Image (tube, rainbow, N blue to C red; front, side, top):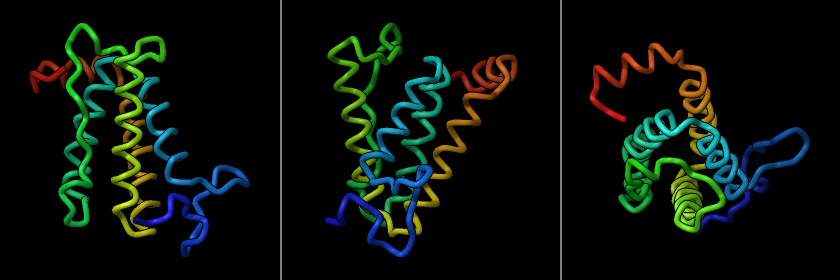
Length: 138
């Protein structure tokens, strides 16, 4: 298993002056996903699961698996034990996925996931409604 910090690799992934470890990367992604409204979060997580299965370096176990959340429990907050479990599971699977990637892949995927989060966050509400209506998702 690869060390959980990427400071010793060929590059440094930094947040300001501090290098980020894989657990910090995963926690940041979970926190940003948690800040999305339930529909945007669900669609982001669907994308993330599909994307990670395509970028798993041949290791099926490295693909993300997100537990199903019922329609009435789409809100992820720290106040509910099941939702805490969901966040911990997501963080753990993100860590496994990032650890399965080569160093340059970690940087590439981290930037891509953050860009995807930003896309879902800033997607116009009207376009989101059209997307949901056309795809039948969410």
